[in-house]
Length: 214
Ligand code: SAM
Image (cartoon, rainbow, N blue to C red; front, side):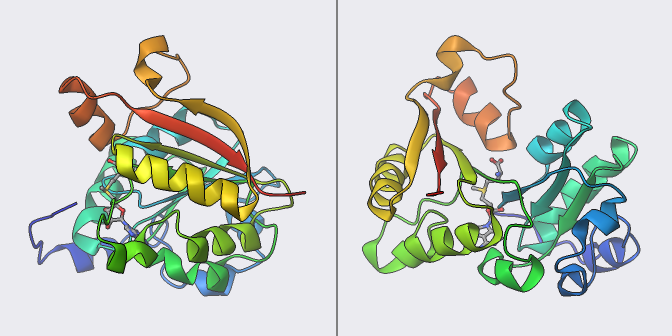
């Protein structure tokens, strides 16, 4: 995702530590204290402009949500969106690289990982940057409980095929696969920015749910 440079973004984010947690490593193992309850915590890696994570937080008040996005000029739009939604009490954002996930979360601290329209990185030499590469799967596994799930949607057929192969090779169990999510128009589906764009162009949306071993 490309974003125009926003010189005001840094100050805007820093002034809102109740939404964008400034030093997330200090909350490792203590996220339920941060939320003030013992409800499950679900994260979205590569949150972008925040449509999905804010929509999920509003639709599911019994779940805590954390959106993770590494680019400040992009996540700042998610912060604005959270404010427009009156700052849901069950939503936080992290402006960090997900490659550092295990610095922020203790083993088993999270309940689920969402990946939505992750960058495809089609060149083999960039494969390690794909959010469904083994290195990332290992990270997700380290912060989820045994049997924890990753839910993934994309418009990119190549990345979807790679992810299906890689997750099953890793030993994950597929629980759900759709090659045209919108054909059934499930009422539980919260669209992301990219999903809106690509589905309005008539492109099918692929979706899977996969569980790590128990
Ligand atoms: N999920 C949003 C959507 O569906 O509209 C955004 C999709 S966009 C193609 C992918 C986003 O993932 C980008 O904003 C990118 O900066 C972010 N991203 C990619 N790798 C990341 C990483 N390692 N850590 C955090 N964010 C990452």
